[in-house]
Amino acid sequence: MKNKATNHFQILYNKLLASVVSNASGSVIPLDDGIEQAVNIVKVTADTINKIMIIGNGGSAAIASHIHNDLCKSLGVQALVFTETPLLTALSNDINYEVAYQMQVELWAKENDLLIAISSSGKSENIIKAVNSAKERKCKVITFSGFSENNPLRQMGDINIYVPDSSYGYVEEMHSVITHFITDCAAEK
Image 1 (cartoon, rainbow, N blue to C red):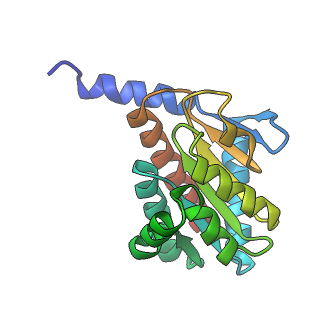
Image 2: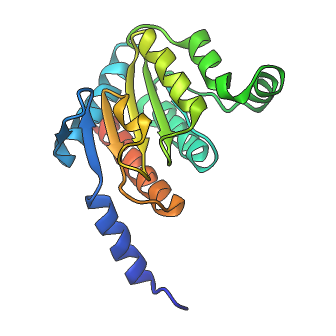
């Protein structure tokens, strides 16, 4: 075996600690502070009976589903993922996949709701459009991205969590670890 487990886990550890958090103005904030702010946004949204919407494509959609599960089960929060197959495929086929999440945000989002948007590249047009719609409706937004440090999604949230790597595997693993930590911390509060 070329890669040893301990080597892989060390790489993951280093990449996790290299994650960068920024706020709505684009200012970088310390990792612990940024994650704590994300936890607080999740907790306040849950406590005020607002809903949390989670979106992603591919592996990021799987992470979104896991977050959904944890939010509903551990926090008892009203949460939605927009990957319900019949509706998603109807919107994608009959209109356009680029607007499939945006249309669902327009249907469900209310002021002070939270949108969690996950895109490894930070360039997925359907994610960008959905975030814009959420912001128009005065929702809070937490983003998770990777790849280029100048990706558009990284500039769009109240809290933006960026993994500086260009590998889908590493970026998705870090997003999964960080989102799990956030939901666990919110459940403990």
